[in-house]
Length: 157
Image (tube, rainbow, N blue to C red; front, side):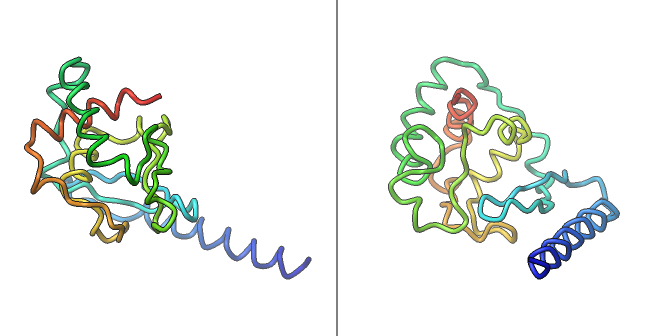
């Protein structure tokens, strides 16, 4: 019992220390810092959105035609991993680490800017914090198609 308490105390101290050190890091203003929470561990880690994406805003937000097109793209390209309902539990999700994002987690989705979502869809998962198998769809989808997909993702409950 004491060993578990000791381990938990050490883990808690490390988390607090990492958060404090992250908060003290300087930013040059060219990139936007956001928090990523690992689906596997629940541990928070900083992410930096590249400058070319940080100010992007979806020009097709709430457009019914864009949402419908985004739904079609989601079914064809995303549902195998993220699931038909967007909860990150698609047919291929079980073997993935980290697990696919849950687009129905409203707290996470509200924290993600349009620029962040565009970046993740465009550049995929081969990034420092993710190291996931997420495809970089930016080579296959046009900018409009990515915005349509984001429009659809924003409608998930």
